[in-house]
Image: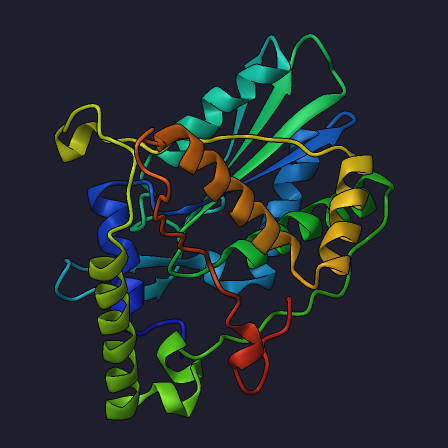
Length: 289
């Protein structure tokens, strides 16, 4: 069975990060209006764990011999109550910096209920990066609420399509990126990045102080763009033949440059690293499921 196999090098890297720093996993947040029944939500989690067998897997073995193994515990659902809506961020920060007990399972969930607003809830999922990515986690939230609505309305979910296992990522990437040819291509990209770093010497924010690894933590910066601003941004990007993602990255770079600007320097060199969607490069293509 493809689920019971050794971890590939990139999957192993995510597990090492999980055990050492605990802040490399995917935390996804959904803000919902309306009363959420925990019994129904627990049933939904059981359904999606059955539908997506990776959510029923765990990681066993030491760092030199890590393997996926079926038989995880049921997806845990923790309920937290907070007085004010803004306090949900406290739970998010906890989830961002708490490692996943991968020998038990690779996903956990938290439902934050706001006492001053009984209709406001936050659903937070933390998923091991070895079995998921950001796009998949968002799709999973959509599926959770879809099933919840059906069960809340008394509908019976009698047909569940179990998703077949995907092969390891190293087997999905294009042939030109595999084997010796792929290694040479990756090496040339890294070398190019190193040369550009030496040439342009990008500046960075100064570190206030160095702390031991166990004291390092991951934070969250939350910004909202209202509907009208979103439409204007979309139209602006369309006119200028760019993507919204690129525009936001540029905005972040401009703000960063202003923060670290030195009066006597006219130009500031910055470096921007951004995630790239590889799905369109994979053949056969991976669907959003």
